[in-house]
Length: 139
Ligand code: SF4
Ligand SMILES: [Zn+2]
Image (cartoon, rainbow, N blue to C red; front, side, top):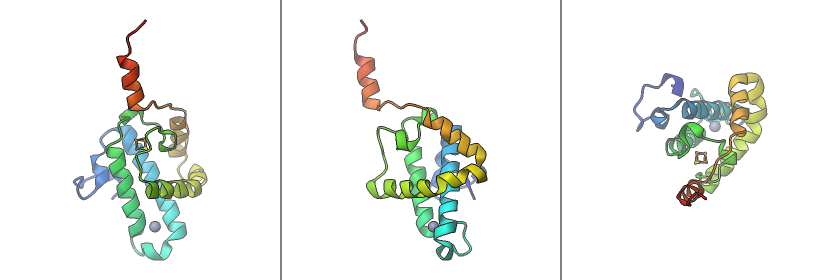
């Protein structure tokens, strides 16, 4: 079941822990991209499931990163994030999936695609930088 029909506990389904609309939409976008990628690259591995085990593992990893994302509702796109919380291998995997599925999202999921463009305009400050700025005395 996808995130829009969440009914599992977060231990079984990491995406179930994503409580804000922004994070849920981000997960849904990632889920759609992974489905496009998997359908075109791992068709034999997926068999009867919607996506293969490798892609499910990646999606669960992405959900756990989202759950811990410090930006919450103000989340930028991960590509523009100054933290880059993904491990190197998963970051590379995300890049590869997005490079392939991104252009294909426009036709298949126009609303998510449009909102992703809006998210790209959002600027994110590193939390350490924000803390430093707030602790500086005003002049
Ligand atoms: S890379 Fe940045 S925006 Fe993406 S989940 Fe990690 S902390 Fe959040
Ligand atoms: Zn796959």
